[in-house]
Length: 145
Image (cartoon, rainbow, N blue to C red):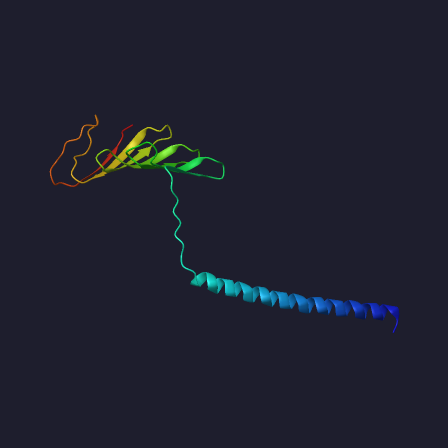
């Protein structure tokens, strides 16, 4: 055998050995992943609890987009912001426990309000409320420009 044939034969044997080894490792990895998947599926579900007084979700630019706030307030709220970080909608409970949805303009002024109440008349522009017995009211107002 000439030296070139011997070198090619040696290289071919080494490559075949490596190929067999890689096949074995690949099969072991696939079987191991399948076993872990079955064990994971059989494991009980874990329910984690996130606790806090304020949660702020930011976008990739670092701007606040969603805020859940119960910090130093009797009226918890969820505020949604536009891509510039300006508050545009707010969902909150008022002092009487009614659900209030405020729609805000780009300057933060209230442009519209929807109130869901159990037995409360709609708010007047001055903010006064009149109690009406046993009547469910839902109210929507829009500001005029």
